Every structure is written in structure tokens, then in C-alpha cells.
Image 1 (cartoon, rainbow, N blue to C red):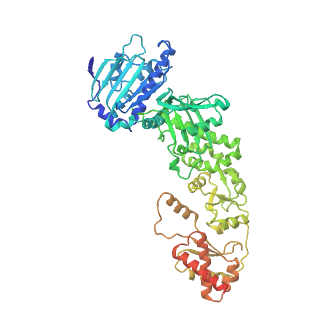
Image 2: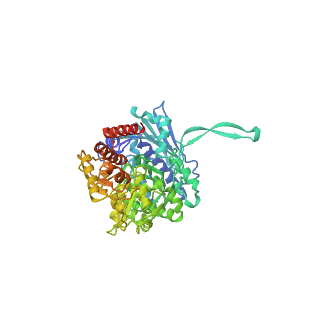
Image 3: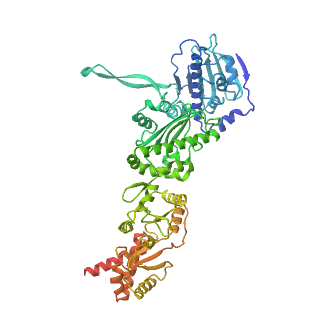
Length: 625
């Protein structure tokens, strides 16, 4: 029997480990299993070098809970430890055997651990930890190391006869859930689902068929419950994978999701190592639900799904896996640390996504257009967020008009420039974000030969302003704003049906009816098929209001300013309203036409809406009588 003291730099190292080092208590399982994988990987390396003799045998790692004994055991069949190595590696906190091994076999080994503190995460859940180990080395003697969470330890002779290490955790009262199969299955699925060494958690029943034809029978047998896929899809070559393979793997990651639209297989080994698969999901309305679906692995060990340090914000809507041993992690592997590698990886991912989108556009434009409703928001988000991404995908951005046709930005400019260029030489792009509400405006524009875009996504307000700023020769106007400026071509003149005094009379009538309004009233000779009264909001004011609403701000009680445009050539104005002799009836009709304009802009609410409905019911009743 030997006794000694663990070499540490502070007497309070264990409380620090237990309370502050790791972000979550459950991380201990990942750390201990990662160590077991390391021990197995070391053995494979030594065997390939001829250093470790004999057959490797079954290298499965076993997770063994025992509720009655209040223990949890992690058992590997890896390299094991000698008595000297046990003292050297377990008794010096932060002295990493993995780091030393890497230095010696850096060109051959694939070792997960880098810090040497992972083992001590066991004390977050255990009152006592035992390490029962036997080295692969010939004539090695088995030993068992034990510690109760202070700086004292014991090393005794052991009766262990098989190579490898067993870590026995004597669970604390507040950690007994880790002796439950269901809880362990959950954590193993989360952290160890793709580790490169098989991991067994007990046994499970499996149905097998025997015999042929009518004599065929099914029976249940017990087999090892292996919880991990040791050769996940992202570690394979794209040339050996089918489209269905990628879809099946997506279902493995996200069992209840719809099929992805398409995907990117990442594989680079210089200037950094990175593999993975990123999927483009169908974008739901709630962006937050879509985020945190990219899982970061380091040599197939799950690290985190919070990848904002290495994946640009706009790419957080993607799903999938990134695996890189070159991403710097802190001592607990729970947080990323920004450095040049991270920036390079972020740039590489952005580049690959842009290239994929451009390839899809060039190779199958019809298919790309069909996917646009699902990917358009994502691409516009990236276009606004990342200058390099914007530069790369600029030619693949699509604009959709109200007839359902798609155009690139340059194609659309070419389509409308002859008919929609204003006197300042700027191309006026008409758009609607509520097609049903703007139906009459859209039809009036089409009658004049204009084209109207459909811009009904939340992000489009920002997107429009970005295009105007970047392109310079674009000016966007919603179909219901500044209508008298853009519904009449600069070279078109519509004759005025009313005399100057009649126009003045109409203007005075509306000033009297709307005497409390601060809004401007204009009487204009428009086409007879344009509505008799329209509400025209200045484009810049409307955008400002919408932007503040998107950002959660309010304009307060400030009245909304707009122009009331009376179409003096409409029959209801020129032939009826103007000629009415009953002043009360004339004012009532003028007010009714104004309220119709407000209704089309969803501005008629509350008591005004109730009065408008009642007024029309009365008129309909009097007319029918």
C-alpha cells in the first residue's frame, strides 16, 4: 500500500473544478468517455507501430450503472496505466498524458484530450473515485487508485486481469440520476453519439427471423446496446455517398424534421482541418427555433451547439455538423476561444455556402427558383450581414414579381428601365408587401405597363434600403406611395375633365369635410380607372415607421402624415359628387369616399369603422326602399 498527496497549485482545486470549471455537471460523462476513447486510440497507435503486442480484441467501452451500489463505472480496454503512470498522471492536475503522447506520436495519433483536467470532472458527481487499471505493457502489475475529493489519494494492488481502465464513481446524493439507464442514454446520445470507439450501455432486445416461408418464425434475442455511430457520414468521402445517405443522416440528427432542401459537405485539411455537413432546412417563421442546430465536434466528441464564434450569424439558420480538432477550446472544452483559426474557418464556411448557392443557380435555375421561397430569407440575411457573402452571391439573388416570375437584379433592371426610369435617371421599382390589400394599386400599375415586385418578407424593408444604397440607380416605392408620381409615365398627359373652378370646389369641399386633418389634399387628373380617393404615404416616412416597429420601438401618439389624392377624372368625382346640390349629402359622400381610401390602407378602425359601416347600411336601406 502506498499513500501520497496529489500535486496541485492550490488546496482548493477540487471545489474550483466542481463549481466553476465546467458549465454543466453532466459534462463529466463526456470527459471520462473521451479519456477512454483516448486510451483506446493510443493502444491502436502503439499496436500499429509494433510497440503493443498481441491481439487487440474487442475494444468496446462499457458504461455500467449500479443503483444498488450507487456507482457508475466507465470501463475501457485501452492502453491502461502502470503504477508509475498512475502516480504521474492522476496525481498532477493539468499534467496531460494526452499532450505527452501527442508529442511522441504526433504524426500518427488521434487523441481527443489536451488538458489533463477532464478526469477530475468526476468529482462533480462523485464523493469517491476509484481507478482500477492494468497497462498493456508486459509484466505490468494492476493497481487501484482512489481519492475522496481532497488532495489525498491511495494506490493499492489490484486483482484486475484484463488490459485497460475502469473508473468507478461512487455517486453523490445529488447525482444519483446518473445511475439511471434513461438518463445515461440521453447524455450518451448528446455527447457521445459519434465517437470513434463503440460504446455499450447494457443490453437490448432484438427480433430476428429464422426459417423460410411458412416455417419462418421471429424470436427475441439480447444484444449489446451500442449507442454510437463510429463512422458518421461527415467522415466519409462524398463520392461514396448517395443523396439518400445525406437525408438519412439528417433524420438521424433531427428525427422529426422535414427533409432538407440541399446540403454542403465540408472537407479541408489545409490551412486547418475541418470536416462536416451543413444542411439548408426549410425556414420556418420563427427564426429562433431554427438556431443552435449546428453541432460542433472535436474528433467526433460533441463540444457545443453554440457556434456563434465560428459560424456567422446569418449561417446560424443552417443545420448540421462541424468537426475540427483545430478549433481552440478552453480547459473544459465548453467554450470557444477566438483566434486566427476561427476566423479562417468562418471565412471558409461562408465561401463554401456561397459557392453551393451559385452552383445550384447555374446548374438548375428552375430548381433554384422553386427553392427560393424557403431560402430567400436566409440569402437576403447573409447579403445584408456579410460583405464577402454579398459579393459572392450577388448574381444569384432573385426578385419575384406579382406574376410569379423570377429575375436576378440585373435582369430586372433591364426589364423595367425603359418604362420605369424617372426624370432623374433612377429606375423606379414598384413593390407590394401585402398583395391582397394593394390589389387595386397593382392592377392600375399593370394597366399602365408597369411591373410590380412582391416583397412580403420581414427582412425586405432592410433589403430594399441596402439595394438602393449599393446599386445607386435603384429607388424602391411601395405601390401605394407617391402614387401620382409613378402611375403616370413622364411622357403621358391625361386631359383634365374639370375646369379650374370645379377643381377648386372639390378641394374646398374636402378641406371642409376634413377640417381637423393636418394632411395635404391634392386634386389630380388621373386615369378614370384609378380610385376616386387615395391615401398616399411618403415612402421614407412609411419605411421609418416600419423599421421602428421591427426594432420594437413606437412612434408614440404622433399622427401619421400622408397626402389625400382626389382623382378629378373619376366618374364618381366628376359626374356625381361635383353635381350634388344637397350639401349634407355631398359632404357625406365625400367623407364616404375618403373612408373607403382609409379602409384600403387598414387605417379605418374603432368608432370610425363602426360609423362607416352603419352609414353605408343606412344608405343601402334608403336606396332599396
